[in-house]
Length: 391
Ligand code: GLN
Picture 1 (cartoon, rainbow, N blue to C red):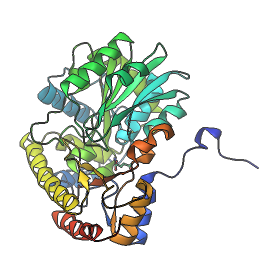
Picture 2: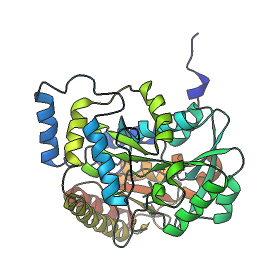
Picture 3: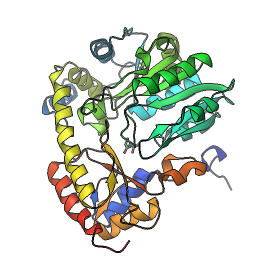
Picture 4: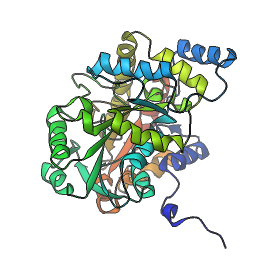
């Protein structure tokens, strides 16, 4: 009997699909997957409609991406981070950031190489590394502050280390890595000649005094970093699946070679609209941050009132909460209980860990707050029921 390949034999259904199904079955308020329940800016949607109707943009876009969008990404990197990106050779457009990470791993890592991943990690990283026949090496973040132990980080590096995948602002913990943490990572990458695949898709979702620091902007890092960005996160259009890789042309060329044979080219009308989106004034990002700061306050209030120990995220639209005061089981059991009995869906973080470290998140749940204020308030009311229940 023909069977599926061994390469994918260990891959289960993603936790996002599982929780979406569970939430739908129980008609729960879904604070699981990071998917806004509101639309992107109407001017950006209108730009997509114009592109669809122009009669000019319904055939293949250039494989590496639309020149106007690549220029927009280079201009954005210069304006926000003072990075000098070649809009032609230093940028490619991908089918979302998920493809950007995969193309980068395939294009920059050889079979047998080791790739360092920080736990909890976004769930596609490790399958990407496995599909590249490379080996993941794990460095856990430790609650409640979700910091790494510098010695554990140092021990993960060896002569076999080819790359490190860094996600800041960090999903699912909401950490924004500090300059000190970034410099330690950078120094080790320089010492061991390691490439950084920097997933910075939540770059504009930072709160209070937190500042996003791009890895590529640190001394000595530009030539060893590819940076990944996402239209979906910054413009609330996750369904368009438009992402990108930018950085020094030698490394971007590796990702570009892989990208040609993964998706070839990305949705053309969406790229036209993405170029328009990136031309919006910088005040757009300030308004986005203010909107999310208010949503963060709402979810924090709901979680705290329900007896969960939630850590206010410095970035992203996720919050991690420790439920040990209100529920006795593990994170998977809690997510099931919360969805089925309380009517709110969340993501259990253990699938974002290697089996040896999954215990770290045993008492944690991730809540997405990229939802209408009304829905967040309703979720808060439902969560309050947790308090009255026996632990
Ligand atoms: N980034 C989103 C999240 O973490 C999910 C994306 C996906 O489902 N692949 O919730």
